[in-house]
Length: 299
Image (cartoon, rainbow, N blue to C red; front, side):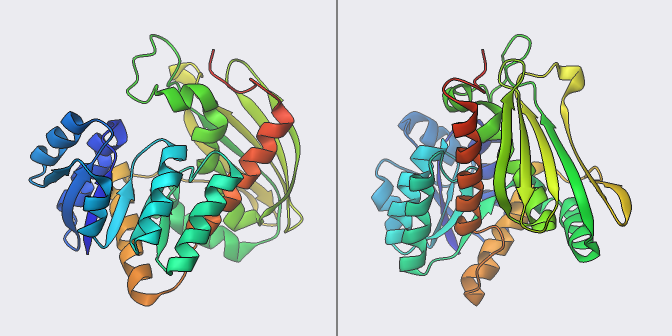
């Protein structure tokens, strides 16, 4: 499959570029970015072509991988889908429900495959754990905690990007938590509470269609010593915890790319397709509405 990369930021440089270049079933056709000089540098590093025109890239590929801020991603994903290109998207699909719905509508109309890269979902240990806990059932409640330190300390993280500063942990790491909780506990019937904590920290209470409830704590401003992710479930099986993974983000993206290939070949919807990405966006938008203007932004 010929695939192009849209985006040249830190995630594209560190993960997307190397994975697309090394994947044995992908032909890394080229790179487009909003900064042509960065696109050329990334393309040269991986022996591929830099494109000045995004439509020219779309003409030369079967699929695109997108590593751009979410609302720019949504606009270009619609464009790519309408051109008949399969979609390897990053989370969140968009930061508005309308933007995510547009992506879903375009993908469905064009009948292209879509996979959203929720990193945790493609770690082998996490995927196996989700399968096991979904089969076990009987869950009463759960808690997910995703604490990052992107905006803590000296603030020199490469991921301290403008969109993360504007939207905070809710939109950056919230999708990771939901991507693990939803397949086990069921869709969210209602965001019953959302409260701000220190700086961009937010606390959510969710009611799930399976009858369970869950709580979620998210931050990008946690002290580095306190950063990390954890998920615990409580139910008939006792208390179970999400295991740590030995996989890297690159391992996870390689797996996601392979699953896009399978979805494009078989014509079957993927569990983490654009429609699932839309549902995550809708839940986060509901939480944002409860939090109110300015809540959950790094300060």
